[in-house]
Length: 252
Image (cartoon, rainbow, N blue to C red; front, side, top):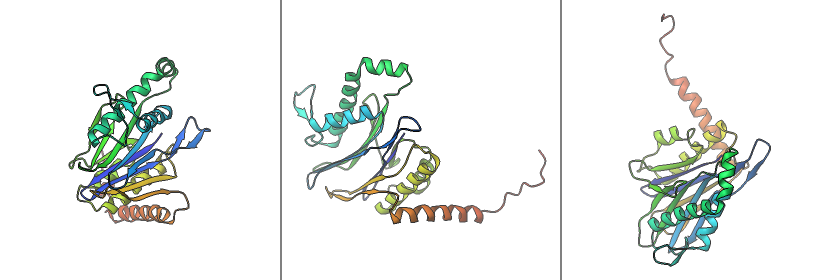
C-alpha cells in the first residue's frame, strides 16, 4: 500500500509520498515513489506512484528512456515533452504499454489474487506553460487538479483526506500546504501499517522552474517528530474544548 498526495495552491505545488511497499506482513521494503525530473530553468516534473511496483517501475523506465509517439513517430520522453498535458499522455501510454507487455502473466496473476492496478500523480511545470497536476489511472486516462478541488491523492487516501478537506484551499500558503500534507501523511501512517517512513517531499513555486525543497524525512527528523506530537496535543485539546454532549438520561 501507499499514500501520496499533491497539493496545488496559488504559490505552487507540494508533493508528499511515503516509501513503504509490502507483499505480506513479513515482506516489507522501501522504494522511492516520488520521482523527480528536473532541468532547472526549463522544466520540473514530479511523478508519485502507487499500486503494483513492477508496473510503476516499468512506467518510469519507459518515460525516462522514451517511447515513439503513435502518430508523429517522434520518440518522446519526460524530458522532451512540449507541455504538461503531453507529459500526462506520455505517462498514460507508458502505463498501457507496461501492462500490455505483462500480458498473459497479468491475467494469470489476477486469477491468483494479485492486483496490477496503479494510480499516479504527475505534477510540475514546463517553460512557457502553466503549473499543472494530473492523476493517471490504470487505464492510462487522467484527470486534472483544479482550483475548486486543489489536491489529489493516490493509495491509502481515506485517513488523510478529511484533513486536506478541512484545511487546504487554493489560497493556502505553500509552506502551510506542506505542513498540512505532512499531517495527512502522519494520520495515515498512524492508522495503516502498510504506509510508513521515510517520506519524500518536494516543493515547487509557480514559474520558478527549479525545486525549492526536495528532501527525505526519516524517523530521526526532529521537525516531523514535533509535528506529530503537536498535532496529537492539538486534537486532544480540541476535543476537550468541545462541550460535553447533552444527551445523558434521555430515553430512546
